[in-house]
Image (tube, rainbow, N blue to C red; front, side):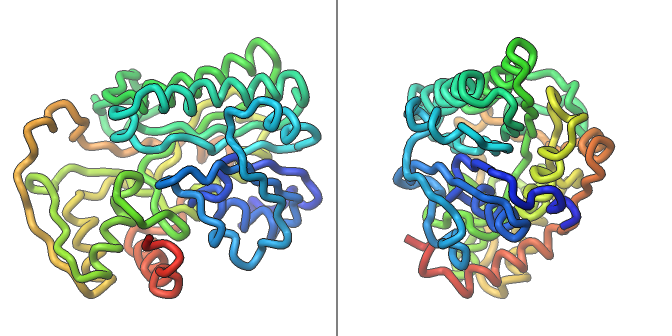
Length: 331
């Protein structure tokens, strides 16, 4: 990655650093010579997994703690050059079941980190990850950053609030913040215990176990799937690009793939499993089932970033990883 240049010797904090995106980012930062500290709560059923640091365990400082622990966060943000703020409650389904927990982590937790930066380290570079679910149903495709914000889920509302907090602290307090709105991440080092956080990975597991993957309706709805290495590349570039400070950027592949085609690609790569169509459940009129493809031209123009891993290649890389390491992720 050309985006690794500039991290040698830098102090970097990654919140949520034992999850999929955070751990892949940490591997890249360590390879670049950064001094990395991870904060992760290792909450049950979430993505945190100590095996995600396999091979670099002795080169990373890990703090098991919560983003909502203000004294801990204040200590950790001191003297950091870059903060990748990835810690979150990441299930839109769970957000509807327990909205107060989602509020506490995705809103209060973000304010605690921003307040800590304001008081202890106002010069740090802060990159926050938002979500395409902030938009709600796509009125036009591809979806640009100027698209109306009409989230259908508690998760999308709170992620949008977290984004606005970061922009407010830039405007009012001079914090050097940027937000990336992620589409549908997938790839290596994601938890595989259930399917609430990422369907591509969950379907890979089902195929590996020879199960039948069920999809609702005809499966024609298009989604934008972005491989984790491309996400990491974008994060690294954004944090080194001053022109992105105070900005909001889409981060996706920029390519739409029909849901059925995604499943078929998984079945072909894995060589096992089957596909079955089932009717939409009664509550699905309240869920966003429209096509969604991100317009990523703004991010490319600002940083030179371009997605490099196609869906089929990303699925193959994901499958290969879990073939080798499944015992660390299945339960």
